[in-house]
Image (cartoon, rainbow, N blue to C red; front, top):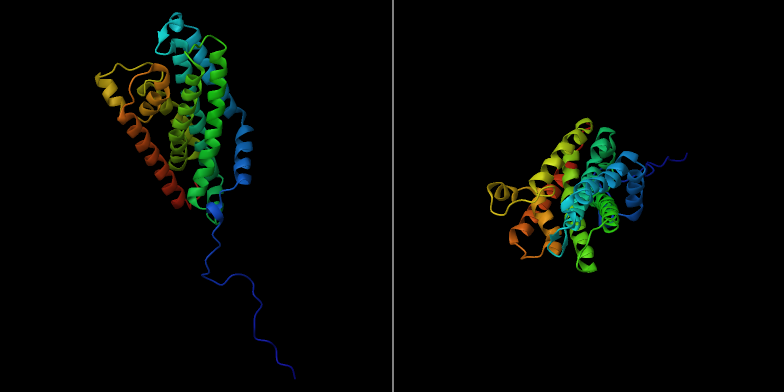
Amino acid sequence: MSTASTTAPALGPAVGAERDVLRLGGFNSTLLGIELKRLLRNRRTMIFTIVMPAAFFLIFGVGQDYGTQSAGRGNVIAFVMVSMALYGAMIATTGAGAMVATERAQGWSRQLRLTPLSPVAYVVVKVAVALLMGLIAIVVVYAVGLSTGARVDNPGIVVTTALVAWGGSLVFAAFGLFMGYLLPSENVMQVLGPVLAILAFGGGVFIPLTEGSGFEVFARFTPMYGVAKLARLPLTGGDLQWWWLLNTAVWLLLFAGGAVLLMSRDTDRV
């Protein structure tokens, strides 16, 4: 009489076994490509990213009599070009980051929590996609600006201002992620629209701030102030102020840290 084996077949990893840790926390080019394609197919996003910033530039820059006046190392049209490119990048990166709110509503965040993808890697993917969208906004505004009267003393100013504006938009990619986790999907864009406009006004993007005024001192503590000052510095000239860098760094750390923290805690379907 044969004796049945008492050894049960292995059906999976033992209870309590640690799940595999992916390289770079799960960050990879495939996931990045999927996220980018999904965003580029959103017509509303592309309109806000491409059309609106360029339209604002034409209204505030080319359409004004003061456009050809001197402004540092270029003219006022160039000054407005940099400002509107930064504003476009801010909208693009914030909107791309805030798309996470929709994913939360669909339960996608809960699914991700079941994978080895780390919160930091997920945030990095979202930020990378947002920065690519911000770059598109900057390129479009600069292309329109340089073809409609924006003048600078040398091409290096164009490249430098564009790169600084693009790098500064990282603050708002993190801001979009943070707000996407903080607010439900049905409210996030309704809230972010007015908030971004207020931040742009407060940071001197639409209207330059008078140095030393009470409002300008208050503006130094807003997220847009440091980024706008840094982006326009190669054009306007002058000395780099330490609080511009501090403002940018502090807000970036606050928004990015908040996004990672909220993502790691986001286990409930919204």
